[in-house]
Length: 229
Image (cartoon, rainbow, N blue to C red; front, side, top):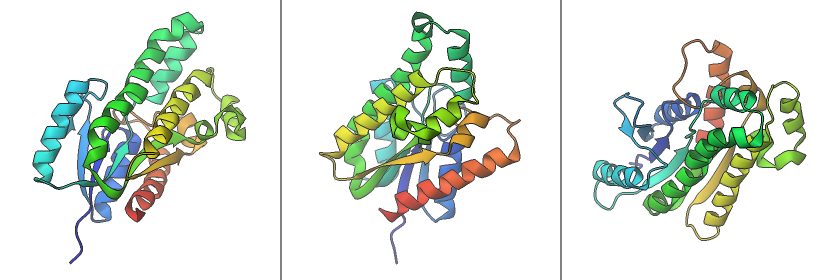
């Protein structure tokens, strides 16, 4: 009888995190869903930017897993803002100095938070397991990616700061991968999914059905990558 695979999904209250968790469960995996401390959903909760909060989550998860048990993979879908909120913050505050608070919050969760999670959770992933991060298709290759300019043409903000934060995530993962025993995966978010609405944060009820369909398609790809490792 095959062993049930176990995964941790951080950002499980968001559109993508929720879709990934649901798809993993549909494939027979055991999933531990984690939301922000303010999510109030009854899930495991954590503020990834707070080292102590992450440490507390490690203890709770190890207790749930059982002594000596490890995860088969982690999906990191955490963001301080929904994409729509990022748009508003960066559009309303066009000067570099004015944008600093919004960017600082993004860096706090998407870079420092990622580092906190890597430090404390990487040892909990079995050899050959996976650590997946949602990455906008245009951020994976930087400003030279043609899709970056396609997206820029239809949104009303300067995407460069957002891309810079996502590139920092990718660099962190690259540095960790050189010494880790698990595989790091950058699962690309289709450009259309980003343009049309938020992909992180609490799922708003008014999103159109086709948006959730695209999120589900993303989840299928992400889960296929994670389950194959």
